[in-house]
Image (cartoon, rainbow, N blue to C red; front, top):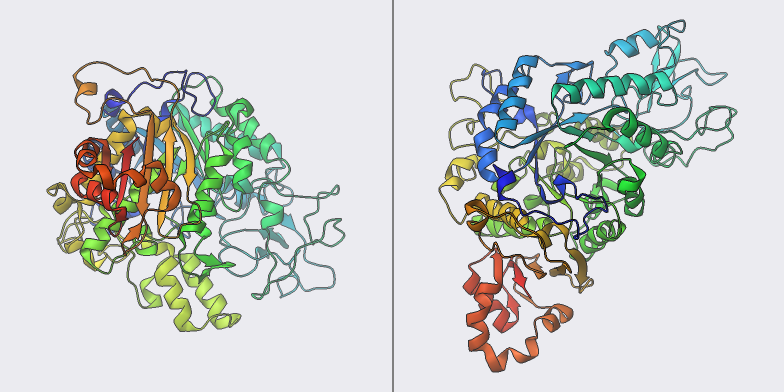
Length: 636
């Protein structure tokens, strides 16, 4: 359905540098966190039939792709990111038949399906890891096994091969008495890192990926894929190991050093990604690959996503998600628009000549953006700020990703007790920082969790105002695995579907605008007024006139005539804001006072989308003053 509504991007218009232009350059992706999306059997967990049941909602929204967080068989230590069998579906989500039905039903609606690929690590219950615990097994070198430090009792503090800490708290090494050695885990101790230096590991991963592609999926979102290559010395030793030629980094206040300088963007990353492209995707059409890239500088993304280098289509960079923390994500600092501009601007600049950007503020690992950078103090401000943040993101150059509930303006969970959380990272880091390192007080850490915990994004999808928000039946035998946000009686899909001024209706317009107007998808990006702290503005422009589909579908789209230059302006605050200097000059504000009446009539048609009524936005232009969370796209 959405394919018919899209403008054709002529090859005269450059997107990522490939010819022909990839289909995903004017697509929109919707991320589903399956355990929190829709429960159909009353066990408190979302499932694959629930996703199939809601496909019409997603088709009506207009998205082109759904990305599923992991549904593979798993012990669920890290909510499915610890996979024990890549080629099976976990029973809490359903069966392989359910997966096949979802694929068929999604494809029949013109929606592609991308699966999460977690191959930096597996579960410790995966058959590969269990076999590797025996030194004589062919899998013995499939993970990063190391002996205890000389002179130390194995399994005791200080015996670890180096001082690396885990992202989820504690040491990044776990002792296995059966093998008598330690294994590396950058995340949970039940998530051992695969040894990609071993070519047998890589080939096993590629076979699995091909199995899924042959089954009909449309690509992969690749979890922490930039961590698969580790830096080792000529002897194969990791930094900080006894006898290693490479020194470890400094130990921090929590008692551990960081593996980031040695495990992110390692020396063989490009080699592995090129090999993956050859082994899995060569000769295939219509797929999408996006890699998660924590701690990767934006400048590196241009090379990885340059189609000539044949690695990945796009990356999830993290520069924008760290602008409101200082050192640790748990040390919160106030939001500043100038920091967001710098982060997003660097991402845009990195792929200005070749490559492509993925655009996101929300996902399963990030708190709800309307609670984080918006204003939820009143219903009016929540709605306005959710629209403003959505408009800002979707008008950048790249492929936008919507996280489930973002299109409703869903908010953070509002938890006040540690026992309300289920996230492993949240619970472990609370105890490490408060009880062990005494780095934060209980009060400040609870405040940080309420702001930043991953569980803020994982509360069940709010479909309606019933007891469990329509996520599961009110009479279900089991309550949802994570508490439903109490505000579901006011914020839910059912009520927003009836409201033409809702956040949901606004997101539908944003998606239609991207589909219909090539300048939104492919136009050049130019930031204005980088130092302004309330107003975020930029231009998008195209030099080439695009080719378009003809027919009633294309003609019915609002603003179907393509624009060649757009001005995007967003007030990122709950206070009125004056137009900053460069933005005002571009609008010719020095002439407005003398010709306000004539400009007012003409400018209504120039407002392509606004968080307020177009007439009110014209009034804002005439006075040079924006209302709280006023954002608009103006045809220059």
